[in-house]
Length: 153
Ligand code: HEC
Figure 1 (tube, rainbow, N blue to C red):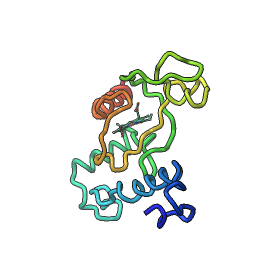
Figure 2 (cartoon, protein in one colour):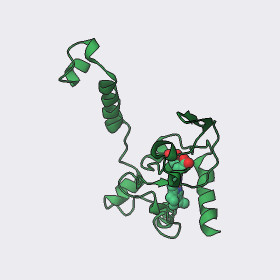
Figure 3 (cartoon, rainbow, N blue to C red):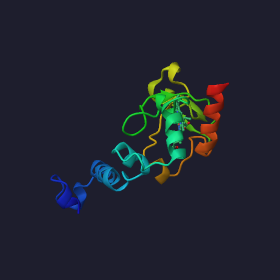
Figure 4 (cartoon, rainbow, N blue to C red):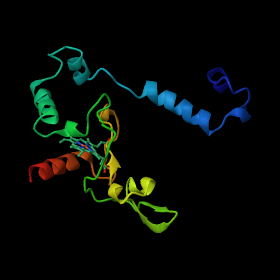
């Protein structure tokens, strides 16, 4: 299969982590997508595809509650890094110069203190199809409620 898929692979020993990562990415790029949700049908012009509760949720998402400030674009993420103040659950990880294990978010990569506890906005596209948990292990619904409280406090 790898020989057929990759021009540069002629035998098993030619397969490196690059070919494996590309194979997994190609699989996820085609198999793990779903474009037939009521929301997709609505976007395609079928105004009856969503029921009234779904439409109210969409109006809140894009309107008053402003979820789309961060969850926007084709994948429903603007790819920014945001500090929501969610407490971490697990031990985090240790870094080269910081042996106390903690999850400091983007700071661990950028070394910029402004990035402390900022995490990339996850995609919400197909969110129904995957396990929805925050980085801190809390079910997303709890966090959504908390975001709402924070925004309205
Ligand atoms: C300020 C930017 C921002 C806003 C506004 C925002 N989110 Fe998020 N959202 C995030 C970030 C960042 C995370 C990841 C948090 C983490 O893992 O610590 C997240 C996580 C989520 C998740 C979990 C997704 C997954 O795959 O685990 C859901 C669901 C979600 N948000 C829905 C919403 C909804 C609904 C709203 C509006 C009520 C909203 N978000 C508003 C930034 C935002």
